[in-house]
Each structure stands twice: as structure tokens, then as C-alpha cells.
Amino acid sequence: MSTVLITGAGTGIGNLTAQALARAGHRVYASMRAPGTRNAARADELRGLAAAEGIDLHVVELDVASQESADRAVAAVLDDAGTLDVVIHNAGHLVTGYVEAFTAEEIAHLIDVNTLGVQRLNRAALPHMRERGTGTLLYVGSTIPVTTPPFLGPYVVSKAAMDSLALVTSYEVAPLGIETVIVMPGAFTQGTDHFPKAGRPADAGGVTAGYRALDPLADRNEEATAGLFTPGTTADPVVVAEEITRILSLPFGERPFRSVVDLTNSLVAQANSAVLEARSDFVRRMGFEELLHVARS
Image (cartoon, rainbow, N blue to C red):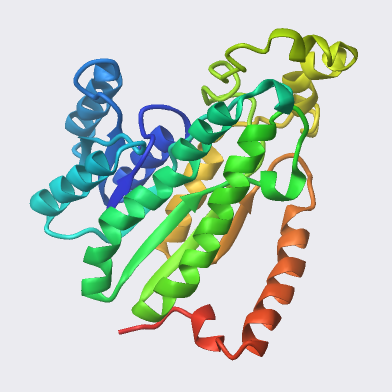
């Protein structure tokens, strides 16, 4: 079994995944911001669950917007467990609204959390994995880079950037024995805080008014998303936690590079297949075949 550090484990997919992995026998470090103050109740709930069920589940503080926090969290895991096998990048925030209404600074802040937070944690964890010559980086991405829904512009940009960061990083860590997995959840309208706690432009002013003709469409964004599911489908994000648990049960080196967990009947897997063929052919023709395969010690 693996020692796992997961971000954004206070709620939603991160919380469900931390529980599922611990119940499967992994040693799990569920991270969140401010577990001693703002998120104390969520932290206590996980600690209580660990005690009640006798599972190897721990809470650590980690703010992905801070390199110092990421460094401290990884150091805490290594001090306690002596190793770190798997990093699960899950933390993220959703915003909705017309793209023009967001300032460049607001979009930059979202990218800082959703994309650069990944880079900070990788910089904290990869030295240990490189020294050992093994490890797994698992990214909880999104089908959004393929589906590109409207009225979520800055979020789409941040998740697409995260996906690209995961991809180009995989080239450079694969020859060092570090594998990459990108899990791509589709839309979920229940079981997470994404839509209820979605951010909005801080001061849209007259910009939003300029898009008044689109308000009827934007106002039913969540309803329209829910309409993508086949009637009777339970859109519970626990299926993402189950898929991550299944993937980490597979032998190292046999885990999929991408896994789509989508209940909206989209064509993401087909699009991924076509892009993978084109990308792999391009890299091979450059003479970099070895970057496409994880080295095994």
C-alpha cells in the first residue's frame, strides 16, 4: 500500500477520496487550509473517522497558494511516514460569470490556486520522489479542456492550464521513474461545494449589464449542466473517489495516463484518444520516445 498526500480534502472529491483510500489500506494524509481554525470541524470529522474505523488517515495543513506551506506539509509527511509515494492534486475553486467581467488580477488569482498550486506541491514533493526513483503524481483534472462549457471562462482556463502543466511535467519525470495519472471528472451538480460556493466577479459594474441579453442562459447554467445527465442518473462524485482507488490498486507502471469519469455522455474519451495519437507521434518524430514511458527501477 502507498503513502498518499491529497490536497483539498476538506470537502467534495478530495474528502471522499481520502476516506476511500484509507479504507482501502493506504496511509493517507488529507490536507486542507486552516485545519485548526476555519476547517477545524472538517479536520475533526476525519480524525474521528480514523479513530472509529481504525484506518490510517491523518490531517495535515496545506495551502496550495503558498510554497512554504507546501514544503512544510511534505516535510511533515516525510517526518511521520518516512516516505511519500503518491501526491494527489485535487484542490481547486470554481468561478462563474462573463469573462470580460473578471479583472486580469482575478483570473490570475484563480490560476494561482488551480494551476500554480500544483507546481508548488510538485516542487515540494518531487525531490524526494526523484531521489527514490519512483512515485506517482495523480492530478484530479477535468473534462473541461475538451468540453469547454460557457460562462465558466476563468475556471476553464485554469483547468486547461493545469492539464497542460501535468502533461509537460510527465515528459520530464517519466525517465526518472515517476508516473503521471490524470483523472478527468465530468460535471457534478451534487456532492461538492463547487456550484454553491462558486466565485463571481468582485466588481462587474457595467460589464455584466452589457451582457444582459445572455442572462437567461447564464442564469440556468447549473440547471443546464444537470440536464446533461441521463434521467435517473445519480451524479455522485463518490465515483471519482472509487476510480482513483481502483487506479492506485493497479501495479506501478500499469496505471492509465488518463481516466475519464464522466456521467454526462460526452465524447471526452474519444477526443483524448485522438489527441494522444497526435501528441505521441509528434514527440516520437522529435526523437524523444523515452519521454513517453515511465522508467522502472
